[in-house]
Length: 190
Image (cartoon, rainbow, N blue to C red; front, side, top):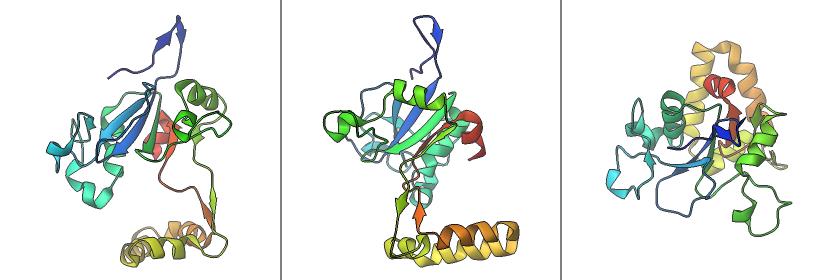
């Protein structure tokens, strides 16, 4: 695995952006992108040659319950980088001012490096839901039971977070898709 270290003698941030995938798909050519086959421990025969989330310390076997979080966990425990990110095989952080199709608008190593000189965390554009809350949006797209269970666990075990939970659930906007690039200290906290 190649990570950015030195270019022309100048130190550059060591950035790695995971591309969570569960099938073969076109990947960005920029070497900061690392395709990670999620759930590799469950379906190793389906992996087209991407990095598996089952190397080193991992939770790959839990992918059906934790989705792309198995890639995030793998990176946290096994990847050495100054900044770590996550995108999905069909969703990327892009710059719409770049010419071309959406694939040519994907942020590059130099784009991220420039952004990380001014910001600690890079997120997708916030989505606004004018006619529903984050809670109603979630239950229309997923099952309500896990969210209800999450709230009950927060109430019983972490009541100091209940106000924040309620604020997020009643909000009509959010940064979606669990996509980000973060400096390592923030990634470790996440």
